[in-house]
Image 1: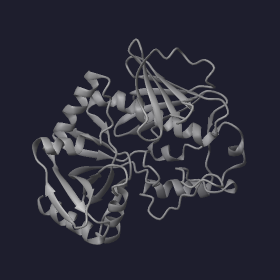
Image 2: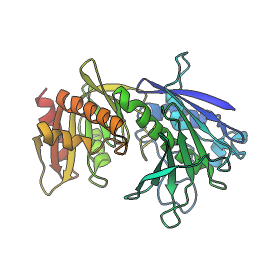
Image 3: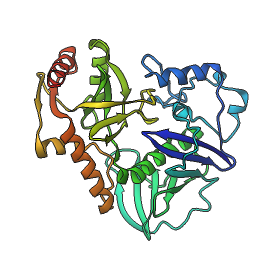
Length: 348
């Protein structure tokens, strides 16, 4: 069994691969892309993984010729997005996840709690005497999962059971989804929240852009990169936030959507900005309950577990009390970025 240990937002986790799975080793071309992704990934082109795909995948490998020959063997997994987060210390992992050989030894799922099918990937949550079971990336018509995540009752051990015959890229995608879910379960009680947002650092502090899918979070971040001197991308999809010694912080993660920005870095949060599309650009502050609701809707939540959800709400409240929260009604243009930057940074 192969093992690697990673550290994200000061949380340590170990990934174990049963045979036939193993970690890919990277040649010079891919290693250079990994280095660039760890520096922010701007201008790093990501191509679809196979002919006919409309959406790019997260892989930093663009052609078969770029990988070492042994990487083409069955079971070799491209975990390049995790490379900047490798950890070689001696501290015990917060949680461990094992990629199992197959779906054949899957434990009993237990009682069905909730099905999430508002947008892909679809999944269903089950409970087996306090141990979560989560079917991942379900087909919208058949409901058949590509993989199933089974955790223990303390969320310190997890196992991922892949379905037979799925592509290696799908195995990596579902393993990454499982890791995000285990991170949420394991770290929510420790004051660390995974959120759906795009984050830009400027003048040493971070601005977090939230909003419903399609409102332009990534677009707005890239407007900052283009028009605000000194702005840099910290993460484009799933950063982690926490409060440390009263200071709200945001961390880069291996989970950055379609943008290859895998930065192992952090910054103090200056502002949280919820985006809304509008014909004119304007920005207004949020206070109290409106600030909390503007933020908490973008936090990865576990609504079916009351103690964990209480911890999530408590951390979310601390974060909005410690930094500015705004609503930006905007067009996707330069003026929107400049309006936002001027308002939030003038309030420091």
